[in-house]
Length: 149
Image 1 (cartoon, helix red, strand yellow):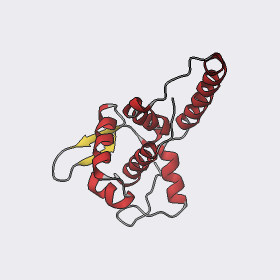
Image 2 (cartoon, rainbow, N blue to C red; image 1 turned 120 degrees about the vertical axis):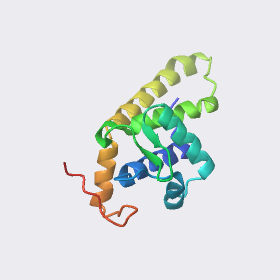
Image 3 (tube, rainbow, N blue to C red; image 1 turned 180 degrees about the horizontal axis):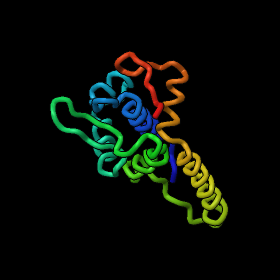
Image 4 (cartoon, one colour; image 1 turned 120 degrees about the horizontal axis):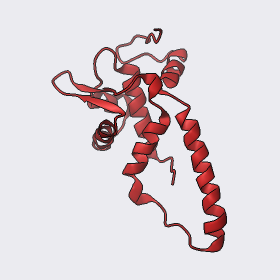
């Protein structure tokens, strides 16, 4: 069941931070923590899961960190939300076995969840980076990114 928790919002912020700041060097988790205020312990857990699921790529070494595993235009909010959902799987509510819950509420909620995920799948990190640039948000190095190809 889709839950837009604080963890989901933090994961989306972390991936957007990486998408926005990862050129030319990878983004280090401590820098994300400093900029976004995301607790380091949670951040490392979710970043590693995003690497395992193919959303991010981890780069080792003294100048290592994280980059997107695919182009910005190929990473969607839906990709990130699904990974976080799999981390929070134990928090799922117990479904009702009553007729109204099972036959009316559950299908309604499933439809809403599917619609939200479809909308998330239509929004890419490229879209969000362009929005941040349009709002004049500087990158970590103080410059505005250039997303032209």
